[in-house]
Amino acid sequence: MTSRIHSALDALTSRKGALGGAAAILACSVLTTAVMLGSLVTADRAGGLVTSARAQAAGPTPTDVSKVFTSEQRQAIEQVVRDFLVAHPEVLLEVTKELEQRQQAQMADAQRKLIVDKKSSIFKASTDYVFGNPNGNIAVVEFFDYNCGWCKRAVDELGKLTKADPNVRVIMKELPIFGENSAFAAKAAMASLAQGKYWDFHVAMMREKQVTKENTFKIAEKVGIDVARLKRDMENPAFEAALKANQDLAQGLGIEGTPGFIVDTRVNVGFVPADGLKEMIAEIRKSGCQVC
Image (cartoon, rainbow, N blue to C red; front, side, top):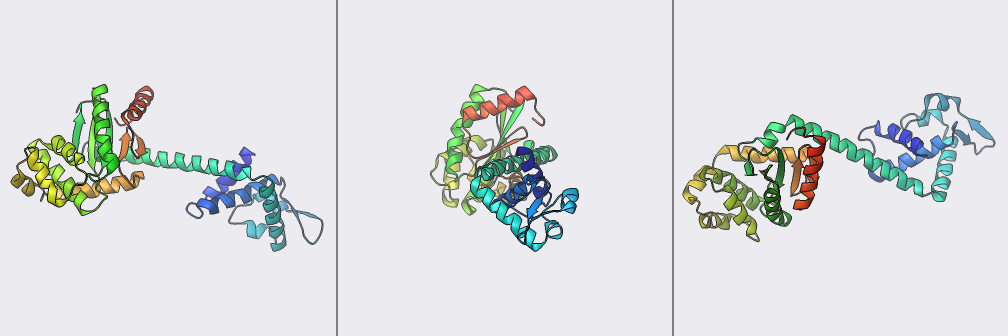
């Protein structure tokens, strides 16, 4: 049954973007059952059995089924499919699992290609702060927002990671997704690089329940930042460009929320504790880095 499901999925996925979700699953199920009929012998409601030589030779696809079968034959197939799925609903689960696995593999491949292509802007952007060992032999990239609750939790996890592994460098990539306050804080953080206060400022803002335009400078002052200079530096257009570049990268990688992590060419969307990052790093070191 699995090989037949593969054939059905091949026919379906050849029509990129044409079907998705439940419609794709149903279409796969219909095709799978049709293939299971062997020579595509269909029950003709007018009487008897009709074998379509053309269907057997050409192989039905979602685009040519209407040309291979008559309306009566298609109705007969639909009834057989319905009866089969009612009797064997587990087929839907098998098709769904196979479809999900294919989609995940395709996404991972697309992410890997994008990371390799954009490795310079991902791992070596001048507007990003590097935490841990700047010369570490493997990089962990975090996309984050100062008003993201899970990002606030990630601060301590990254600290645990760099203490446990002195050969890791963590690249902090600003991705403000929670509005103007987050974007303002991100620009302030990048501007603080010039004063050598980024990490202290970063941690202090992450400790706040909510970071706003009103309290960003107060937090900066508490960690010893020259606020007047910070305000001037924030006007640098390079920071706006960096935020746009980060948004484009995140979108291309399928990172729609924060935090999001890149370890070598692997992408993980969502919070990952230190132990989880350690496991990913160990696996990559074992298999060999591609871009780290």
